[in-house]
Length: 498
Image 1: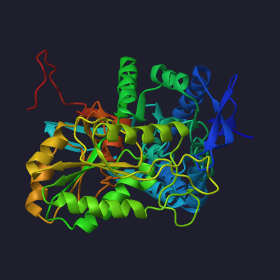
Image 2: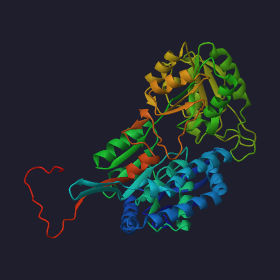
Image 3: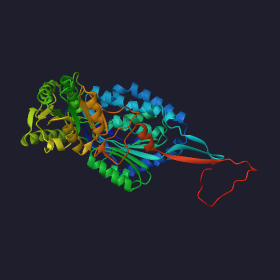
Image 4: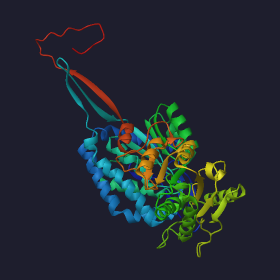
């Protein structure tokens, strides 16, 4: 049985007094590896290595850092297939879907390759007689990332390339459900020429998380996960003097107006709802059918849901793989039953699905619920599975009010042929990321990723220019170079420009 170790100071290590837990193949239900679980001692070892590496890495030239990023980016291209199969085997998503997440993560590396322009400071000449002012940004030190199971490559890649390229050193605590991608990326960094200790991986559960949140040697923590844990991370890390990025849960709505191309809308909503078995923070979990669009939209969604091919992630032609754990499968199927009991119409029932040759896998089929109300559990809870709830609204105004009343504000979409409706929607909606005829509006790497309300705890989104601001702090320098013979009067009043 393969044991997945930590990666500290440039090499794999079992850590101190290690315990392990199983890593399963969601398509078969079989244990395929064990991962080492670290705690405070392992975090401290990683911080010590990262702090030592920071002394030299933070003083490295911008050219040296970008050269490493260019090499790392090329290695991600060359090893995309291998990494995609690793992700599929531990997460369950299709290999094609895993390739997609690697590509979106690689875009952040490409952004980091161009930091020379973004990191440029500013200069103001002669702000006062003989006085100039300029500013620049410097790295924080040792920073950490705590990332979820649903994107074991992409979400960490939204963090560490920007952190490392700006001169910080990084400790990653990935999900223990699919940990191998993190170690694979660490090896790619080594091959790219990244010095030992700049990128480290500590596996584990809550003890490792708590150690990262409280360790005095860590300057900042980035987190993506559920809202309750995001609030915990933000509170704990902030109280210990750290900067915090904490992205929480979501309940993403796709609003469909009667003037939309309903076949187009249903096709994209189906992919957005059931892709990766709905285990995406940007998954479409609610379709808001407005007015006369409702009945026809539900009919098309029914047909599309029944066409989704469910199977192992490594099987050709599979659209949707299994859920990540048995517990997730049971939770999602119980939620469908609860919705039915509360009055929703189960249009497509994905419960009890069995795949030939994979009877012990964690499969459930797409489920489509109609006549869902905002009081039902299926609407209020983040199900994180292949369940699409249809809520009906009478008008665009009512649909906007419905979305705005939801406690989450991560992503939303509007399907329409009306530019006027689109402009009204994007200005009035209280959501951080908006798609117009785009169901999963994940921004490009040079824009920030982050929602509003309970989807972002605090005020710091991830990657893009916001990521640079998060991982650096500014210095402003005011300079005077008087001639030796020049007399400059020193005053006791507060200095002003003249």
